[in-house]
Image (cartoon, rainbow, N blue to C red; front, side):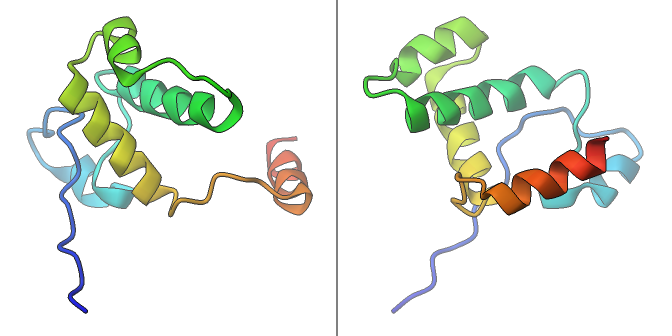
Length: 102
C-alpha cells in the first residue's frame, strides 16, 4: 500500500521576512495576529461538528469567518492532521492541563 503524500500546511499567514519564527514553528506555522482568527475558526468548526447533531455547513462558517470555502476546508484538514484526529480529552489529560495553567 502506498503512503499518502504529506500535504504542506495551508497558507494561514504570510511568511516572516527573516523566516526565523517559521523555522522554529511547530507543525510548520507560527501563531500571530494575522492568522489567529483562522486557527480559531477551524477549531470552532471542528468542535461544532463534534458536539452538534446538525452542525452548520462549512459554507456558513466560511462566510462568518471571512475566508473562502476551499481555504476553510484546507484549514480544517490541516488542523485535524495536527491533532492527529485526537478530539476527545480524557479526565487525566484535562487534569494535567489544568495543573499546568494554575
